[in-house]
Amino acid sequence: MARRGPSAAEQHRRAVAAYVAAGGEESVQRVITAVQSLSKKLDQWYARQLADLDVTAGEWAVVATLAKDGGALTPSQLADLTNVAPSSMTHRLDKLVERGLVERSPDAENRTRILVRLTDGGWELFSLAIRSSDVVESDVLQDLGDAERGELARLLEVVIARLDDIEA
Image (cartoon, rainbow, N blue to C red; front, side):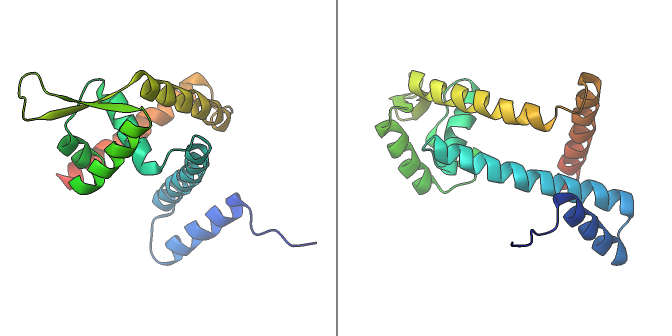
């Protein structure tokens, strides 16, 4: 019988111990290591989910960005918001248009500009993906009560805001 590797908890403990041995503060390293591990595990799960939906991560980034914006964006805005080159965005948009998930149309206020919007099919895909991921995300957080979830969200939002301050 093949031996399984160390559990996630053991990997976390070892990583924290290594960072502390190198001079890191234990409480800081516990938090950072936990967030990194959570991010990695969620990324792996989301990648499997996108494969099941037959959508690439790049295509999903466009769909999600348009859904979160709630309106229409130019290809350049989408490229900036998803951190890709404009030529890559053009290719992504071509594929998404072909699949009926987005549509391009001239901007009524500036006919030289093109706007991209989700189609009904794009909204359906976004909704399906969110409902599917919500099931797993709820399972991950099931041991936390509503107040604990709220506090965890609040604390993470404080950390994110601090990172924004450092980057500015």
